[in-house]
Length: 178
Ligand code: PRP
Image (cartoon, rainbow, N blue to C red; front, side):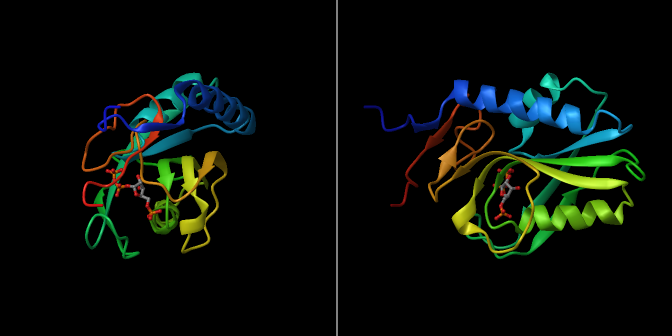
């Protein structure tokens, strides 16, 4: 077995089927709302956002935001720093924050606060996966793909040391130093 190929945790078919369900649910929920803005959180959300947005059937625009956690990359300190804000004016619009993964929840909580400071009409959240056991703050994921355990996951936007982001499935890797 090739040790560089992560073991499949969530298959491409399962991801695509769940993304379609979420796209249909979001399209129904926002059917009567004008000005839906999908805000993708760089970098990890790029693939989920692309697939989700393409499967939706209502008008939507796309923005991106980038944040960074203080501290080293493996251990979240809970402090989040804004690296790049949205480019457009989102005041008065309905915002859907799109994340690849919710781990401790600090990033999503910070972003919800950020969106409120932009004086948006509403904020909801979508995430492909969530590590329920790692939650440190209470934050709602309105549109969730899958709950997972405490494995190190890669693929479909998620990386380990910037590798494996473009895998079409979610896989599990062992960190190099274990
Ligand atoms: C990941 C993910 C979230 C955040 C979640 O980003 O995309 O933004 O961590 O962690 P939390 O719930 O503990 O706050 P990461 O910092 O790995 O950056 P990347 O998306 O550029 O890979």
